[in-house]
Length: 207
Image (cartoon, rainbow, N blue to C red; front, side):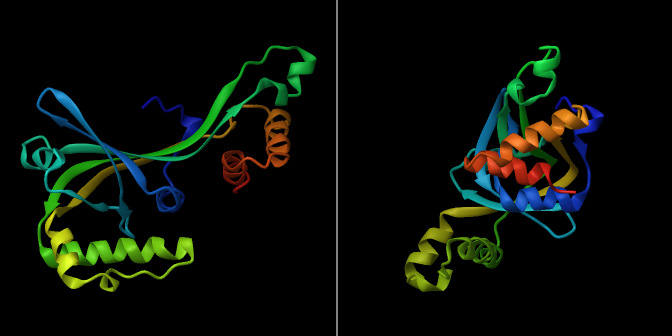
């Protein structure tokens, strides 16, 4: 990833917060002569050293985990927004401005392992459910479904664990602009009701 220093974020707390808010990762690994790309939610451990998830047993990621090259990269995508040059004061002064795109992503690199213990898989699925249900003002539990059905579904999946060797964020939030132009972007974002622009605004206004 191209990563200018002023966009680089290494603070685990900041990275963990983005992963928690945007848990759907793009997971990339090598399988033979092609890239195996999947999209799945992952949970970051409290110490930032492991990512946990689950996949179908027929998913080619199983083969990735069984080969000698088990290296994978998980990409978490946070807010993103088009930034028009019309928001910069310098547009009126010199006209020497162009559009750009602000965004926040986290890359986690590591080794992929399979977790086949049925108890681990059930606990993981329960944990993921318990984390996300409150977001929708719901309290559905895994035990609410018939046990026979739960067992059938759990047998169709396998757990995965990524031993994280590198965790880095790229937060491109107009840090490279002058204070006046940064303030201009924030001011215009504050006027918008668009959800993605509000998410970008909230990220830019964080200390």
